[in-house]
Image (cartoon, rainbow, N blue to C red):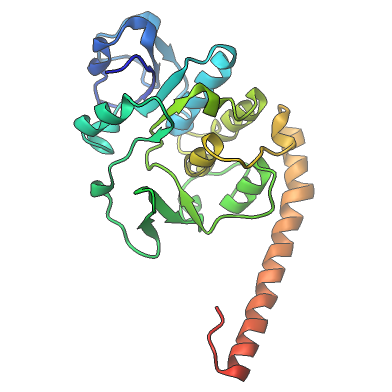
Length: 267
């Protein structure tokens, strides 16, 4: 493998013995189990609470090392292979020195219009927050609210480009697109539960966080406590959500009326 630095979020029985082929200065393992079943040096293990899936581990690493980020970081789960990609594909992609989603399109069961293959051979998913009813959320229950909160935009994407499983090769310059405060807030968003709904939202936003010209919002450039965050959601997010729902309601009414008059399909 290359000399890229590996940040591995480890939970469950999948082995990380493959890391032993690397220098001890080239990786760390964020361990969410009580014990490590692999013969990895203790100094390479950072024990963390079992919250926020692998997203919490990534954010914790960035926050703790923001001033000393290596040139290229590979963020991955201990079961990245064979769960998401083959070992051969993982080795090949993890050696790259540019921003790279670690994914293997041949493994996807694409079902249009929910999921489809993008022009860059990447995964696209319809943005409909399908996962939120199945996972506990503390701050955001709809992806669009989350998106408009973390980014300086009022527009929301119809489809989301991301690597399922959130495994990426990320150069330092891409990580530094966002402030340290931004990552602290993201880490806090996902840390309230092992299966936090916000973790699924961050998974779907990582590609944009690390690889886009969309600026972070003013609110995300300062560290927010629960009181401040809940106040912003109450005064900014909830009124906007009601306005959008009202607008969508009347758009549907108007479109239906025009279609009935002119006998055309305008949607």
